[in-house]
Length: 456
Ligand SMILES: *[C@@H]1O[C@H](CO)[C@@H](O)[C@H](O)[C@H]1NC(C)=O
Ligand SMILES: *[C@@H]1O[C@H](CO)[C@@H](O)[C@H](O)[C@H]1NC(C)=O
Ligand SMILES: *[C@@H]1O[C@H](CO)[C@@H](O)[C@H](O)[C@H]1NC(C)=O
Ligand SMILES: *[C@@H]1O[C@H](CO)[C@@H](O)[C@H](O)[C@H]1NC(C)=O
Ligand SMILES: *[C@@H]1O[C@H](CO)[C@@H](O)[C@H](O)[C@H]1NC(C)=O
Image (cartoon, rainbow, N blue to C red; front, side, top):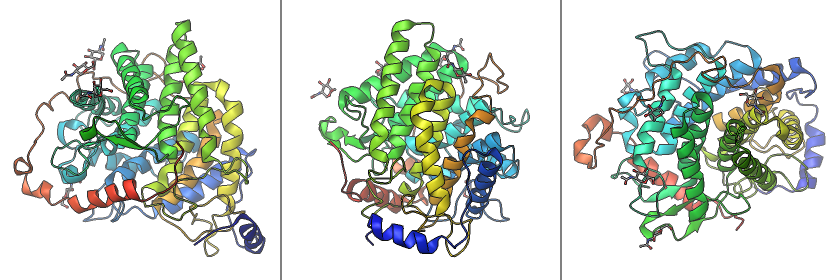
């Protein structure tokens, strides 16, 4: 399938009679309505709350991490719109997936559990704390904040000085494929969680680790001097070679963390200046994720044009949208740069939510002047929902902190039970082994071989 802009414009004219989502970005009710239509479409993909199914899982072939991302999106959905429709399934899922060490390490996921997967659930819990999503009852489950702290604590202990001068590996367990890959999203999520925990709690330990992760990524070249974020690097070669694919979510996860760091360094002029410069740099670098001809419309450049976005990648624009919203809330001086891009992208996305006359179904490509590209799934749906709902940043007070409105209980020691991870597959119980080793291989092939586009 090849798309040329002019052909799509022509098709778009034909398609305009088909019902799409009608979005007026100046009208709060219109934005809420658009978000609720996209949310309904996303919810349809989720079956985990059905009797006999597992709360927190999306059906195959969608991975566990994407479900964690989806519940993070639903928490923000509630926060931005006030619609409580998905709160119950969200709470049930987060609690069911807490797993070992109360750190989002459920044994069923052992065979594919990467630091990034765990982190997407941890970031959902952190969002719950920042948004004041009500904590579970005492004795029901740990607080949202402490779950995020548990993810941080377990990952901080995995910081690996043995090669490359540091960094987190992609995979947690040595017997899984991808254990030798130090990838940007794992380190970026760790940075994001550390920075947001630092902002939330004021604890310097977190900001020290956030700086360490950022500096390491920069030193090893996962981040370029111009703030382009690449995919990852092989630690068997001491991280001397970098895979240069660029994804929206890597830019987004760092943007939000840098915004949190800027926000919390206000009393220290030199650090404030440093983080302002870094955040401004990331914001400039995301230009590559906006269409050259169809101005300000977000594109997953590495895979949309060549039609190679896998299921994971189809959801990535959701996270860049989410983190643009977060950034504008905690660093308001970024609104002038970010809001026009988000608005234009949202309007473009809404226009193509019209698959077979069904406004609930959104496609992958947004630059098509209303022509639905026939691609659909939870990733496409979540991306549309996020790009709509993040237009509502002015309707909410912004993320709380422990001393300023926060209600989620802190437990800095959370997750410390995890000391010795199994290093050998034989130490893992049979049930855990039944996971999806094969699927990891597919992910690896997808990431290393799936896309040709790169900027270096
Ligand atoms: C693990 O899998 C079993 C069997 O499918 C299921 O009953 C259980 O709920 C799952 N647990 C989690 C945390 O996913
Ligand atoms: C690895 O380096 C970090 C940062 O310098 C340090 O805090 C940590 O203790 C080191 N870990 C090990 C196992 O040496
Ligand atoms: C591996 O990379 C780190 C970080 O760049 C560097 O400090 C170290 O000297 C390298 N080790 C070897 C053996 O090349
Ligand atoms: C820091 O973030 C909070 C929201 O969490 C926001 O209210 C505040 O204005 C931000 N600080 C600055 C200096 O912009
Ligand atoms: C700050 O965080 C660290 C790491 O989790 C923890 O050990 C320490 O107790 C915390 N300090 C305070 C004052 O909460």
